[in-house]
Image 1 (cartoon, helix red, strand yellow):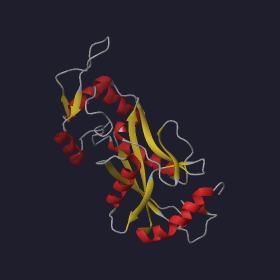
Image 2: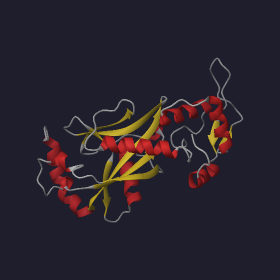
Image 3: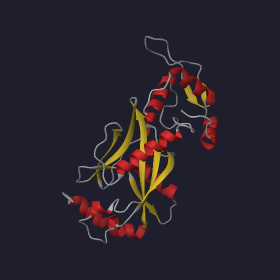
Image 4: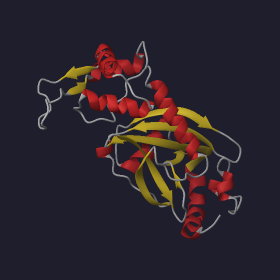
Length: 252
């Protein structure tokens, strides 16, 4: 491992505390999606003294459950609360993280074998303040179409999170956590197209979204611009929450 420098010192300093405070061999990796400027973004951390980036992650405290730990990790990284979190997979391949720390002593907390629980999160881009931790030199949004090199198996975790989001889009509503409170139908369609990675027929999309009966049309259209002002919509939260619990009957 090259250019360990301050990173190695920090890891070795924290190792004893981690053995004391966290449950061994279980880690959490979070794929945080945001939507901005008609692109889907993912939140990444740049590892200190390294060229690679990684997903926000951490460990489960001895007095936490898994969901509490994931929410805490994301609150520390983003400053956002009440984040939509969905557990989507477990990653347990041999040496998925140990090789990254091969030049460290075997007693180091981070060098142990970890089974990672993956969560994806949907957040309002405008409400997130990316916060690097002590082991990172930067925390930034990156376009999913232009990702930097990722550490360990984080590329695999990210792609599986995206695939899970695409599958769930077929039977659950998506958008409340990614769009502003008021939005146009073209903006909602653009979000779906970016997540699905394909174009959708405008008429079919409008009919299907209205048939789901989770949107309220606002009386006032969006003002400004030379063309006819587009209608504004917002999610009906009671119906949206019901659709999250029970799902849709048809997909995309």
